Image (tube, rainbow, N blue to C red; front, side):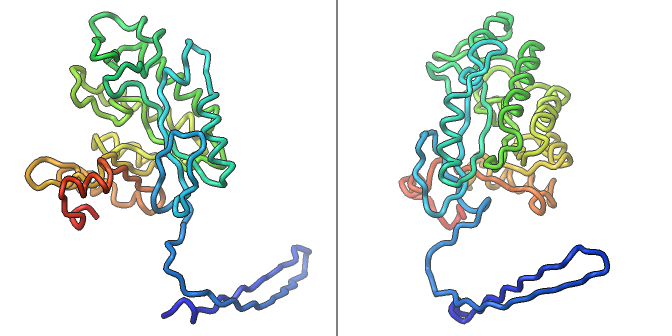
Length: 289
């Protein structure tokens, strides 16, 4: 059926709350919807724009802007939080009548940037940390790290929980890029008991916000979803039949563990590379959709 043949009927109904009174007022209005080939923007659905820019371009088909923030940026001194960069970014988004999503990161890309604050590195025992490039990698299981990370998550929640422009918050902090894995590093992820503490810390800090959980570890995903989280995968589109890949060997299995999650909470995907990269790699885009 053509959009131009659709008639919208708006019934305006007012019901008096006075005792013993039922007054119903109705009015009918008809509007014609014109044919269009424009992709309609559905709030909270569709594409998300990743932008660290304080003035993100208002892409017409994007309603959510995403960015991650490092622990060292948000807590440069122990117990002293710096929200300036985050607030500038958040304000620029809310002024465009968009929503934002975010995650806390502690270690990442082996660059010269330290993603965990220096004061925390100084507290970590020598045998529980090592340096790669310009970044310190460490064992998250160290008690002082767990304690400090939970305090940072709590402060993050105190700052943005319930913000009307907050679309969702990732369960983050642990692992490389906050992605809940230690790929390429010598230290493993903490045990389930400690990981569960970080998951709980997010639910405690963000009781009025939508939370999504990484699809990296089965028990963690199931536990977070049981508490009301959605799911998130950070390497959508890495299809490659010649090797292990998320699209074949992880995501189908993980989502099968939480088949009802999509009904109440978002399922969020981050692409591996970009569609342009897929073209450059001469990959079949039909396999990636």
